[in-house]
Structure formats: structure tokens, C-alpha cells
Length: 51
Image 1 (cartoon, rainbow, N blue to C red):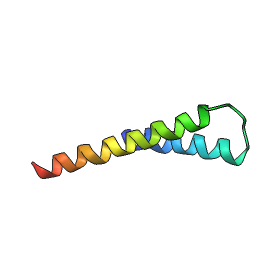
Image 2: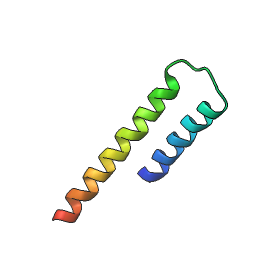
Image 3: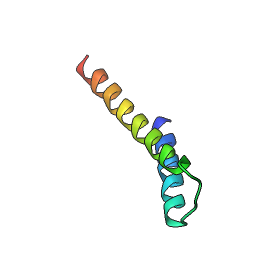
Image 4: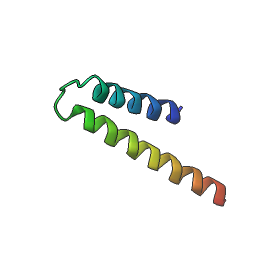
């Protein structure tokens, strides 16, 4: 589920960049949220594999 959210946020950001949508800082905030979720998911999976 988290991977779907990350993918969706990244695709929204990419579409905004490609279409040159000027939405202020919202496009970059979407990318930052996607990266934070990606890192959170990777850390959570690493902890699960260690146990």
C-alpha cells in the first residue's frame, strides 16, 4: 500500500514537471513526501528483516 502511495506521489510530481505546471512549491513538497515515505518504508523493512 505504501509503495502505491509513493508511486502516485512521484508520478504526480513528474507530471507536474513535464507539463510545467506552476503550482508554487507544492510540486516539490510532493516529491519530498514521496522520498520521506520511501525512506520510512525501507527502514521499516530493514528492521523487519533483522528480527
